[in-house]
Image (tube, rainbow, N blue to C red; front, side, top):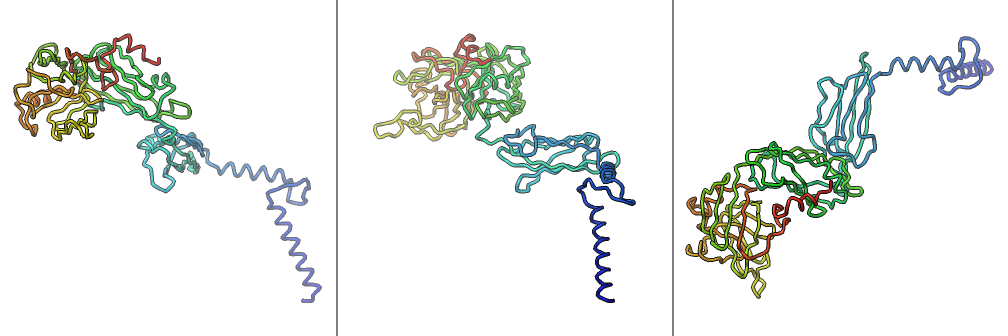
Amino acid sequence: MTDGKRRRGLMAASALLGGVLVLSACSGGDDKGSGDGGNDDTSQAQVDEAAAKKTSEAQIKITPKDGSTNASINNAAAVTVTKGTLTEVKMTTADGTAVAGEISADKKSWKPNAQLERATTYKLSATAEDSEGRAAHENASFTTVSPANSFIGTFTPDDGTTVGVGMPVSINFDKAITNKAAVQKGITVSTTSGQEVACHWFNANRMDCRPETYWQEGSTVTLKLALDGVEGAEGVYGVQQKTVTFKIGRNQVSYVDAKTKQMKVTQDGKTVRTIPISAGSPENKTYEGQMVISEKFKETRMNGATVGFTDDDGEGEYDIKDVPHAMRLSTSGTFIHGNYWGAKSIFGSVNTSHGCVGLQDVKGANDPNMPGAWFYDNSLIGDVVVVQNTGDKTIAPDNGLNGWNMSWEQWKAGSAV
């Protein structure tokens, strides 16, 4: 082939390729082609129509929105679909750890099986199909609320427990609550006895709830925490969504008389036993008032230095490492407990303690016939111990679970709603 023919052939091929490139380009222009090319707008409409026919009608929605922060650890993560059914949903943490979840029976929604972790980034990938079997895909990632921007409430009593008639619902928040009304509205306490229940704020971190008089024996109390997303303070949100129930046992109230040095134990209004006791000495009187048993220990250590009873050398005035059958009555260290180191003759005769109420007992806490063991075995957390005639002041309502020492009017005055 001559050079002239070769050049003409290359030019023809170049023109042909240029025509193909023009016809296949995505961007259009005002120029109209000739021959079979037709109108560019018409061609684009045909392309769009063909693409639409191939696209799934399934519409997937992932919440929270992609890129969200401060997301709820309870209800934030969810996938739903309309005009289709879910076929696969995958959720992982940022490092790839899988999060278990379940597609609903109708295949219209998905949610994780458990509460999410705080301050964690999660990724969601969802696939759905429409009635024609065409697949649709959606992806999103979000970060849950951090501990610094959230609050939780530690509550007592525990779910499923049986407690005494004096047991309040006590909630301690890990952040100071400034929007008390909003938080209180997110908490409900009800009882099958029908008693009115009111809540009282002792400070920015603690709220207790109780009826006017002791709980009705045999009733069931329900605590509902609906705090998820509630702003407790500026920029600090609740994360709890929980329902707790506990049962009220028999009505046991014990009356300690420091003057007679006897304790009368009553159940359902009848005296079941009278036990000799030794209360606080004249120098270390026992608080007076209605006190609720908040903890029980078969044996525990009691060191005077922890509650301010020290010798000149700074050491505790006492340090007993195996106090038997100890039951806490106050945060500040008041207990009713067994005493094996005191002579039998002191019980019912003289007040010798540093402020606790002592019952005769043995070292090792292994004799069930001792008064200390009997009272321990027959007491529930939440039982009431009323201490009288000590000559000391009434215990502060927030020193332990002892809000019963406030009148009903005073109690309700501490409500935020």
